[in-house]
Image (cartoon, rainbow, N blue to C red):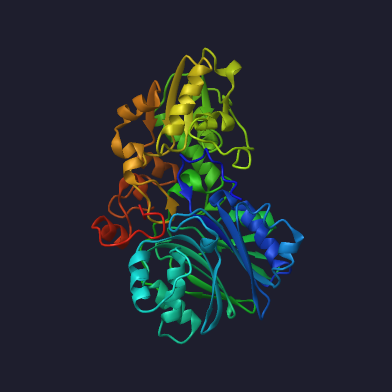
Length: 485
């Protein structure tokens, strides 16, 4: 049963979140708690694999963590002191149980379970070669390519096989691998996708965000470094750096939207950054209004920062329902337009007759922005301005974000004035790319050596995009049901 909000389809969505723990009593229950804290990173499916020192145990299901891993009969079957888990949105491969992670395989070196956050941008090319050499795939997920590369590597030890496999992939990955030889965590050389390490008693924990460590009561140790591979075996931590060092490029959108505001990303408070983004937005694109109103919930911290910097009252002009989901309604075309009102409703007594500025994190297709502006006008707002707490999203992401094809991104088809007319606002403005970098504590974007991966805004991709380039040339068949664009 899927419980993703059916009307929240006009946002960029993270592919997934991962959580792993070793040497812990009740490891699977801890993983379930950690995944619950990471639910915002993936709401289509969830899975947990545990290892009891002899056997691996797995439960995977469609839908949220709650409802699937809050039952004693499920957790009691996931025995062992080590476990890894995953929450998923799909960016490659269709939405089906066979693609739910962790993926598991019996290799020559023993059992191997893998949970992956990111996207392998040459997965189709590698898959095509592996199939020609005899590999038989059980899913359409790019993550399974890593398993087959490990299985077919000519190296002897599992660690060397994994390193050999990762040296062949391009793109983004944070991985947690549960093996007979210990728990392995690693991050791609550019550090595009996040991964942190924590400790609770004698237990070592890895997670996509620090908030998951907070939820289980663990102490944050540090971020896993870009290009670092950490093996935890028998209570000992071994760090390896097998890749050629490169300048890191972590995803800038983690600070804009993906991460929970109570997380720390790359040593910086996400909440503080989002408030700083709002302040930069007010300085760059101020407007004379009565109220600053966030589009909940993603626009709230930036709206607070905007209001403080501009000296304009912050008000909740839009009230959000947190109980919208497919378990409530399966809308057809005839009622789909009601979706925004199920999720967002205008605070009419507040906004009637007032000039307001709406603060949101991004505009993707523009459909939700249009409906919210219309809703504010129907509530009697005298003027409706829109300010966006990021630059225009003009390009698709190939690194683990569920981005529409470029042609469906509003900013790729229209300039700001045209976008303003499309969403029917009185004015529209976006944060500049340098303003975003200033909010992160930088003087500006270093165009020669960008500090972050910001390709969705700039088109400056930090890795090769083999599959995309070949598929545009018509050389590759679509992977599963979804094109990597």
